[in-house]
Image 1 (cartoon, rainbow, N blue to C red):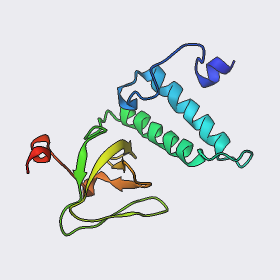
Image 2 (cartoon, rainbow, N blue to C red; image 1 turned 120 degrees about the vertical axis):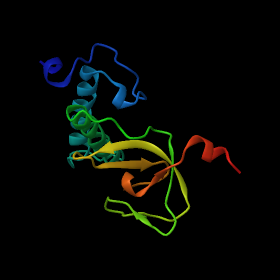
Image 3 (tube, one colour; image 1 turned 90 degrees about the vertical axis):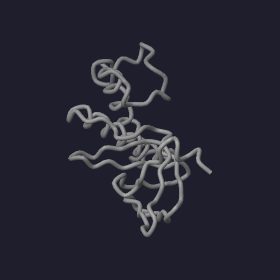
Image 4 (cartoon, helix red, strand yellow; image 1 turned 60 degrees about the vertical axis):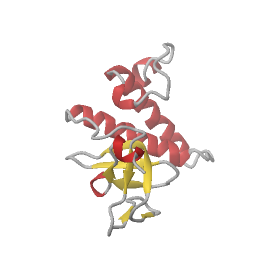
Length: 147
């Protein structure tokens, strides 16, 4: 019964480091359901779990991957892409801590989140927030190597 509800735990799927947008449908749904279960338990208050915020964010990330797949969308950039805050603009995060990114600063994309209807946000390395992708500029490879 657990295999029907929560995926087949007996098989070994792709490693957790695999980018979720590259997973096949079965592995993606298994990972999404497992993330939801884990987030539900760690955020329930029944246990004290220091990973609760990560578990919840991972479930949101995988929800976006599933939604993007259903809507036929592909992420506009990949994990590891460098982005910059445009001159004359500050970018504010959309989560509760609302971190602010300042102009001219370069960041590396950790994960790309999809919220439907063309709304993409990025999680940046060493930042605890999500930022609207529409307010950041991807840096092309040749721009990164120029002096």
